[in-house]
Image (cartoon, rainbow, N blue to C red; front, side, top):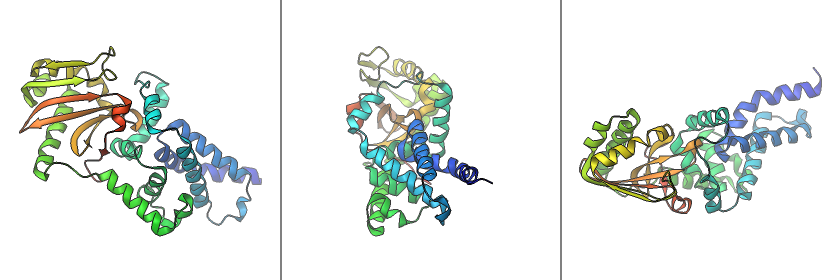
Amino acid sequence: MEPDQWLAKRFEADRTRLRKVAYRLLGSSTEADDAVQEAWLRLSRSDARSVDNLTAWLTTVVARVCLDMLRARKSRAETLQALSAWGADSGDAADLDKELAIADSVGLALSVVLEKLAPAERVAFVLHDVFDVPFEIAPIVGRTPVMARQLASRARRRIRGQPTVSAAELDGRRRLVDEFLNAVRSGNIDAIVALLDPDVVIRVDSSAAPDGRAVEAHGSTTVARGALAFAARTQFATPMLLNGAPGIVVAPTGRARYALTIDAAGEKIRAIEVIGDPARLSQIDFATLNSPD
């Protein structure tokens, strides 16, 4: 086999894994493809026969490329502002399905929190906790192995979050959020009404409202009907901790687009706020309700 053919075949054997690494680091299917392509270009210019562990070498290259891309991104507020124009009906459907499949494989909740991590934290956590890469990855993030371990640990704490409610209240509100989301997904208006306080209020900011104007509505039946209009987006929805309390995040391709804060009293929901404004989303501390696998 010719050297070029051997190299291409060897790279293809690692392509799927490299793309998964890149996607989890970047949160973008297109950028992940760019990072993997850059790894191929660097491999084709190198003396691959002298590399003892080509898979490890390629993983290192992809991680470094992704880290550079993360550091080159503009501020979080500008990133969220760009995302605010994203809609579930935009882009190529096949590309969207592909990104959703990848996001599902790592979990939408985890994908959302990864967006909030600093680049070095993100790289250390993803490589070690998700892909079981040892802390010899330290040179990738410019740290010692001990410091890389600390980066991953800090990222882990941010991902898991710290609830601001008691354990008993956390369990009850998580159950309430789950039941509400399931009722909306199934289109069961009676089940939705049963979960709402009779005087419940819902507030939708202008970035989340269909016509671009803020909305406020009162009453369980009115709010339940409004919730059903949200049903089409529930394929992108997942329960999460929002500033330490259970709520719902709508995250196409793993990126927060809307956040629903839910205020509950006992076993009833008394207020829902739907947030779509990028600046307000950037101020929310997202965390997973369950520890990542």
